[in-house]
Image 1 (cartoon, rainbow, N blue to C red):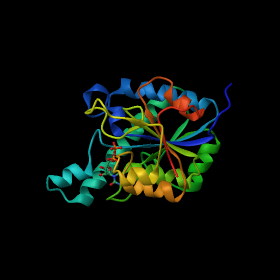
Image 2: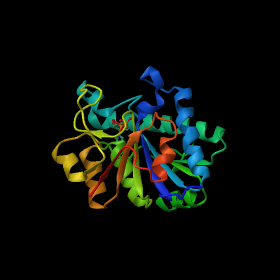
Image 3: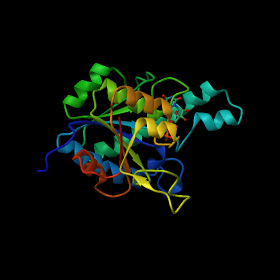
Length: 238
Ligand code: UDP
């Protein structure tokens, strides 16, 4: 077996990864695809924590732009991430992968509360830990939740799954001459306002020297490639 590069990782999945072609809501076939890869990685002994976004269902910022109170809208966004977490849990468990959903907003009928020591214990026992409800606070994002939980749980890297194969100087979906970076520093992404993750998440990662690897989720085998330390996508570092 290849030598594993990382032994504990935080994978950040945007809500849109769950939506499939519909671009909205939850498409079980789309979830199954990446869950097979996550389950395979977990079976090799890599400890996996997940933070899942909610943008496929509800985004606080968009709703507040249309007049909703921002905090209320953000709490709705966090609830959306819980729905996504349950969908991913279901898919992983069907693949015989042990999981626990830990929610930052206590919701005891559906998930355990997020308790750092408990999360670490689950990871040590080989369970995939799905961190739901973001940070539990409005005005944050699930990118920031991923950076925060990665640090708390002592993950060695944040693996940010996207629909493009790395970080570009401009949006590769809109510009055919966009250039991909193999690596980029935290500061550069902030200065050039390259939307890898929001600035709070980048600052947290920077202050704690936590590498972020941005890669294409939709190319089969990529999750295990990243975990094995293969150079794919873009690494954001100090
Ligand atoms: N959210 C929040 N606090 C958090 C994490 C998320 O208020 O700590 C809310 C926020 O409204 C956000 C929504 O949950 O718009 C969904 O999360 P996000 O936009 O990060 O999801 P993604 O874009 O990754 O799908």
